[in-house]
Length: 211
Image (tube, rainbow, N blue to C red; front, side, top):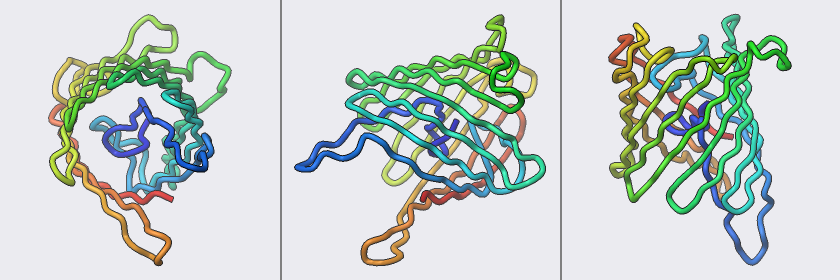
């Protein structure tokens, strides 16, 4: 899951509701379009990826749905449900991953609990994606650091994340973003990432826009 290239990941989304003189709606929706779908050091599908989301956030609680479909025959369908809660700098999340077929079938569902912690420019997260029968799972840990306008991340995992399934470094990424001014009232958010997976040898550059 990936609301942004490096952390949405989600697959933990932690947000708080901003309060002003006029309270904002707790519901939000949008669409991210990326030149390719890169997540935790791996590429999914081929061609540009369209990634819609619908989110409900109230206080420290966030509940929503996120999806990704590539614009090619190899669409790499993914549709996720998630819930997260933040306590200070600590984030707790659970994600239900769905990869096609019957949504009611256990064979298409993967459940992942995750913990994250942020302090200043530094963040860490750990996740464990359980297999459909809950007999096994894949670990993933990531450390992130914001250096000016650049977000850096190092990820380690096993199973699906590495070439031989052993636990090792699988994600080295650098992301930056900016807003392109279209009119006086509207700017288009653009992000770009460079990602290397030392385990599989995968090297990716991807750019996306958010609508």
